[in-house]
Amino acid sequence: MISVKKVNNRPLNFLERIYLPEIVRGIAVTARHFFTNLLRPGNILTVRYPEQTIPLPGAANQRTRHRLKLRADGSPKCVACFMCQTACPAYCIHIEAAEYAENSVEKYPAVFDIDLSRCVVCGMCVEACPEDAIAMDTKEIPGGALTRRDMLLTKEDLLRNLPGEPSLLGASNRLANEYLEGKK
Amino acid sequence: MTPFLYAHQDLLLFAGVGLAKVIVFMGGVMTFAALLTLAERKVSALMQDRVGPNRASVFGFAFNGLFHPIADALKMIFKEDFVPAKAEKFLFTLAPFFAIAPVIALFAFIPFGDYVTVLGYRVDLQIADLPSALFFILALSGLAIYGTFLAGWSAKNNFALLGAMRGAAQMISYEVALGLTLVGLLMIYGTAGLQEMVRAQGALLLGFIPAWGVVLQPFACVLFLIAAIAENKRTPFDLVEGESEIIGYFMEYSSMRFAGFMFAEFLEMIVIAMLLTTLFFGGWQVPYLYEAGFTLPGGRAIPLDHYIVSALQVGSFTVKVVFFSWFMLIVRWTLPRFRFDQLMALCWKGLLPLALLNILATGAALLFLGKL
View 1 (tube, each protein chain N blue to C red):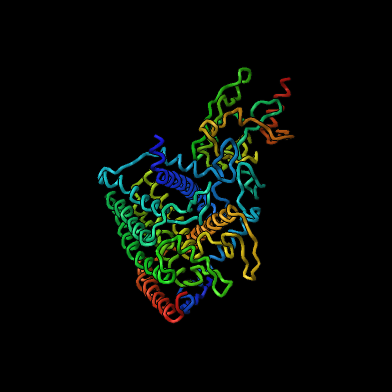
View 2: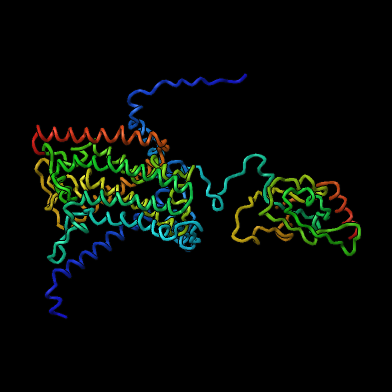
């Protein structure tokens, strides 16, 4: 059912036609806002972002700055499979793969760069990752930077676990950790 | 050397005092105009529940955006000074000067205080006390149209030309109304000198109402404000600029040339605020404050020092000017733009007959009530 709003366009009365009283009413509204905000700046809803942050609402927590998870021994979970690079619609991920010298089965990323100036924060890389290695749950919002270099996240910037995270989730990760245990 | 100084002592003193007044007054006006560019953005922001510019900082201190005028000026200076290939180069260069020079000249006639006595020398707080200042002001504000039209025409851009043509039509129309609203004041005060008008406004009506222009000519005050805002080409009369549709006569201007037009607009705003204060709101007069101090209607007198009285008067003028500048900012951010036919109808069918009627009523009142 489409709701229809009936607009009653009555002709303007004399005071409205000479326009000045209506102008005074309009100015009263804007002046009231001006003085309220001047005297009580706390009422302004604007968040002065880099200095001031508010808790992110709802699922926005799951789309913040990227990170690469670590295994129990500190090696990256990422196996340099290029899934995220392929899935990325903004082409902002650059991976160069390398092989472990003592473990010719598995690869690791020698270079893993994310160009935040290109990233559209869509979360496709997280969806694509078969190893649960990349996540966007740091709750840090990628903001502005003064140079392009500051917008580039390298492997060193990305590799970190959240405090208290066991990093043992996921079947493949458990297997990898068991393998590492067995080697010791 | 010494005989020369003695022979021309008065002249040299006059020149020195004049120069000092120009430097102090124009310095104040220019600073205020710069702050007004910031105030325009801050006031509009606060009206719309926003914060406004607050990022420009010096050594990490932003003072809520106080440095933005400096940042804007620096940006303007370092922008490319662009001249379109087809433009009329000489006139294109000349137009910003035509826009800004008449406005600056207008400040010479504004009385910003009564007088101060410095080392026994009487200094009138007005740069030039011209007996026909009001006519001169109208003539100079009529010159401002050259800046607008030359800018639009010499750029050889259709949108700029459109803006300039709108500007010419609008400014010529509203000039008529602007001049006619002031005739009533001329009739009442019997002078065209602004300082004399302000002195006359120090009188009291019925023993307690200050005889300000707004009390004697309330109708003319409203008409003058409307016509003056239209003459200044600001919203709701900004069809000349129409930033959402044609950009306007300064479309092809960049860098400091554009800054010239923008600064002229803000200076015009200050001039209008000052004229409104001077003509209708008692100029530097504070109610019941005379040369010797306050004399309240009951007859109670509070004697004050000459310098305190002068400071109060200059302060009163400043407060009034700041208030009316703020009022014009509020008006600009409250009202939508007129259509062009509405603009012309307002002038020729609204303001002009009302101004003529006001003259008639003033004349009748003067005839029957005698000289006020």
